[in-house]
Image 1: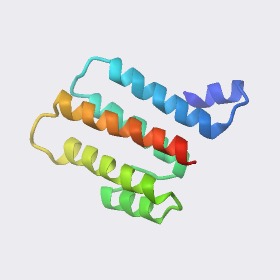
Image 2: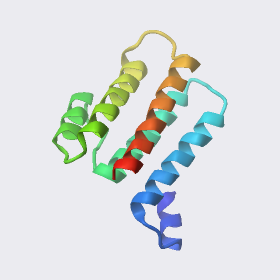
Image 3: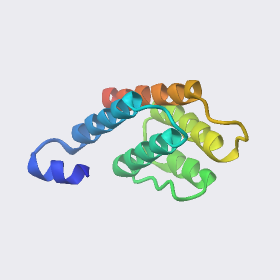
Image 4: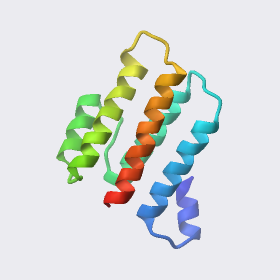
Length: 122
């Protein structure tokens, strides 16, 4: 979806990735909350992490956190992204409680702040 736009416009790939990710998060925020909202958030984060840092989230959560730790990424970014990944994973797969809109908004806000931090630091 994003590659087509990238080919048409000659823009900096990193800026484009961050702006598109923030745009997708904004769309998700406006969308009505439902059971699949956390899946959508996880998908956006997964695509961003793969495109930016080549981190595959199809692995187990332990492998994802290990590969995040091994990558040459600013320590501030690692400290912000790791809890988001772990929190979404725990909510999506391990929690027996229903995922609430408040929890979703919390993770959405944290993800937006992490992406903006990455934009600043890069």
